[in-house]
Image (cartoon, rainbow, N blue to C red; front, top):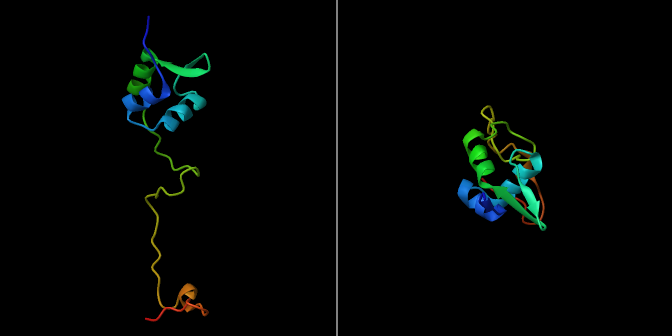
Amino acid sequence: MENLFNVNQAAFILKVHPLTIRRYIKEGVLKAVKIGGNIRIKESSLQTFSRDFTPRQDISPANPFRKSANTTVKRFTSADPLLKMQGRAATVDF
């Protein structure tokens, strides 16, 4: 009989977060079975997945904080409208 791992055990083995394992299962990248309302991953499926899997390199809208290679950084200057705001505790002196 083959060993079965739960989501937390599989996450520990692959060194990822348990929600990442659930997402892989939902996307169909990682095969799993549901036994009695619990998700279980076969050891052979986990080995196949870890051997064949390569992380995505694309930048998806789901992760807007990831910087692309051609991102430019805008510097604030004294001419910036944000720094010219007037009001209570909104002024900045240079």
